[in-house]
Image 1 (cartoon, rainbow, N blue to C red):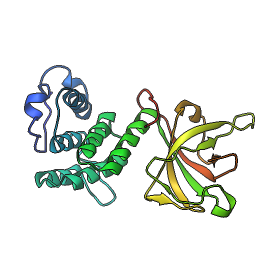
Image 2: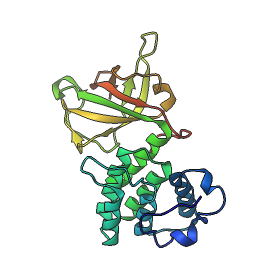
Image 3: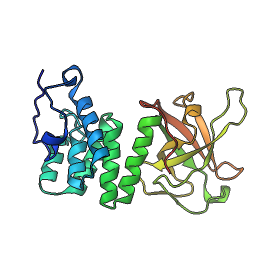
Image 4: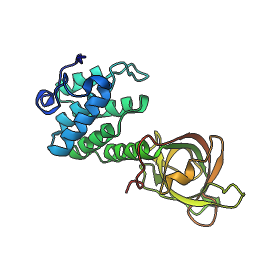
Length: 244
């Protein structure tokens, strides 16, 4: 069985990936084959930004499209003109549309770090954590400033690590720490509301939770906010500690 590549291969593709016509490539899907080859390449040689983005783009199925009909072919157009930051943004969007292997997010994180795009790098590392440990999304409402300790906004880029009462089956408090990423907002004001993603320090203890369940956020002994769980998705690869 031969694999046909319907997009221009990156400069390193022909020499660094194993021969597409030999080995066990014919017994697995093309994306998994490329993922293994890409991971091996990244581990064994230093790649520049364009090569990293090219490597990540090979992991995205051509049929995947965003709400705005962006596909990986658009990414290739931007890469051809050295529009690396735009290509990175589009790859992040495509990664949120279709589940992709861990190496995809690791590759994007490395590219973002080389471009010194701190928030993009932090997001890609966050998605690495979610790939390993699962996704937890919630609708969070903070208490207003006159009712809570917090008087100032906080960053939504995974910096805050509050304690959460997720509730024991017996009804007793069950407190655990989880970092917090805010979707589509750079900061959250006291009294504000936002969709958030959580990265627990002990992910396994959260997997028994269900959508619709209510948990509370704490920065001291009082309740700082209330969150309704929207999505609980288990890990696809062995877990690791929360992102630092």
